[in-house]
Length: 257
Image 1 (spheres, rainbow, N blue to C red):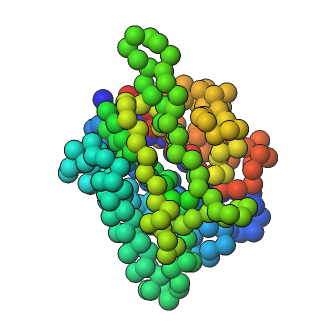
Image 2: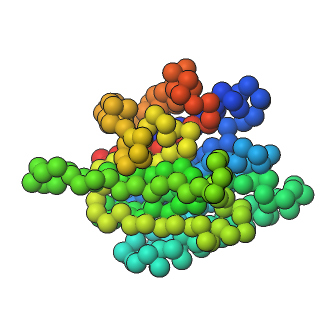
């Protein structure tokens, strides 16, 4: 079995009004059963966070994708082992960000971005997460037709104050790196920046908001990845969506095929 991935990022109206580019980014690596997917959200106060989120997403997805293809058994390790693997990928990304910052004679904090991602195969996987955004994995329906278990969710991590979160560029990034297991096969994966959460998640963040997600997933399953991603972008850019939140919005949906 393999994965079909649909993803889009839309610039929020608050950024459009100010002439600020979209500060979200996504990246993924899919090869057979292996999937690595990443969504990053640049800090609104950081002047180069659009570059930071793009470089972070690309580097982490590539590093973990290569690792999981080369050593598929790494997905079967424990939380301590997976934390080390995720930390290695983040370290590579931080090194790339540092080199970019030095070349631009800019502080590393100018590239501040959060990170939420998933790495897995057909049997199990792991979430990895620094800061806000959210990840949801919905289990595959059992063969006996019984109702499936509740979704696995990696929740946002925010600071003490409103609108505060943690960034990969921070000195204490290791303290804020969280990994959590997805211990069984999944049917759907959704990663999103916090701008998409108000309409894509249940109010308590316990799972996906079914009236939004289910018709979207049915449509995506009927089209190819390019067409589906264009449709997803149109949804994120819809005036009704902008009416819910003026923030940048990124949504990545992976379906098992």
